[in-house]
Image: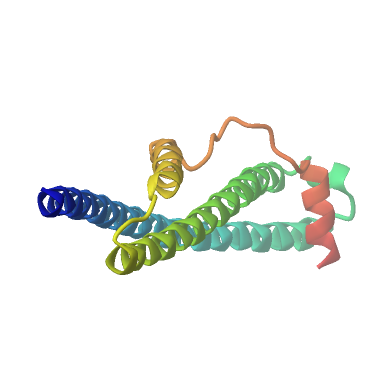
Length: 180
């Protein structure tokens, strides 16, 4: 009778460990997929940032050319020239977009670091299950689930909202261009 009881207890522990192993392996697969998506987002966002920065530099060069052509020395004179005023507004918009996209890239990189941390913990828990035959994984699984939910919400949002106010005035941008 005692042998049967020990066998039942040990058998249920093995089944429980198999369930935990499967759960951890699913979590690792989810983490890997989210990491892939974040890496893809980072790559796409960095490519977009490069294009926006290039456009901003082209607009600055146009302003320098117009400034020389019209012998402009002040901001008040500059905004009287339609091309310069228009370029300053575009630079203002591009700069705001660039700052917001940089924030998104930093968020994605931080999310990737957190996911890598959780993946290491999950792999450690898998090793513990093989060694100890019993480990509590509920705390880690709750953290992974919370992170996954947050990241999926973020991934379904646009990278930034274009209608937000611009942090820099056109006069500040003009002063930066003139100094260089």
